Image 1: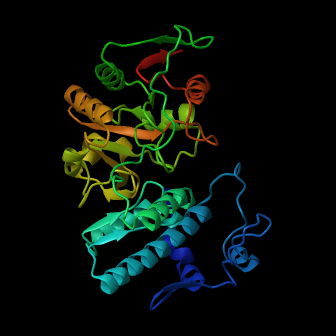
Image 2: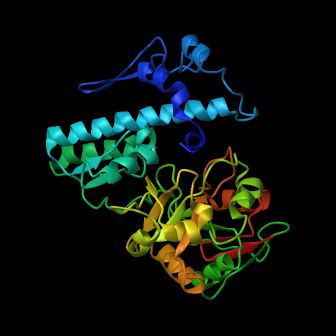
Image 3: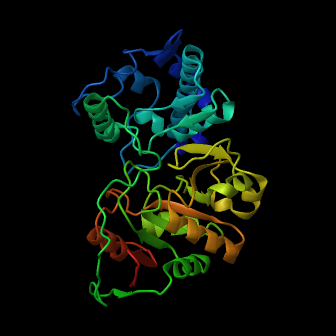
Length: 360
């Protein structure tokens, strides 16, 4: 999705139209171009014919060339067309104004955002773990329905389902070269550090379900800082420079900064930004003029909502950069030890972990 915004879909548009054909009831794939899905790594996802018509596979260490961006753009363009057609068909067949997206492609926040913006339905819902990892949640819900005869309740806004460490105690020097203290007011302490330009890891409460960091295992930074994206990519995340960073905003201020028709609690929708955002917060604007936004309410995440409120009082803008607490190639930090590893191995300025402030 990120690379697609840098490319021109025209070069491979006709190829993608042949590879992924629209039909009356959805779409179909041409197996001569896109191989049948198999559960073995020795089989490629695309065919030699597809490679011959596009480009050789790029090694992870090789540079990203314009042809790669153009190919990404064409695939993203076709994905959007398919998803918009499927959404319109679902609305016609069911009459429902609520559309729920499932499967790995539901993580395509650009396509989901386009559906939301198009007004095909009243609301687009993407669960926090719509791909394979969320199957366990669906299986549990199905078992509950089978046993009780009633649909499960209490799932709303419950994306924080993993391990939690509420009684964490740290020594003054949790590791060689690290020092820990306990601020009297963690909200004010964190907001002040962010307003001063620090890049901070946040480890609090239960681990998020799904691939998005939603404020429990996050790296936070001020979008007002010059060069913050370059610093995050080069010294903290160690990832490709074309990838954008997502913003988190107080839900009741979301429309000031993003052209949202609905809430986006799980960072699952990309939305066009407003002129205010372009002018004041360019660090969170991707080259296509959108941002993958997370909206936060006090009900969903009281601590993060309080931090955003305080940060807004200090800077005038209740918006922060929010990316996952990890380094490229490693999983999101699920345990305190992993979070301390992330602090020591990256350019993080500090870590707020269950109320403890840890620095190098």
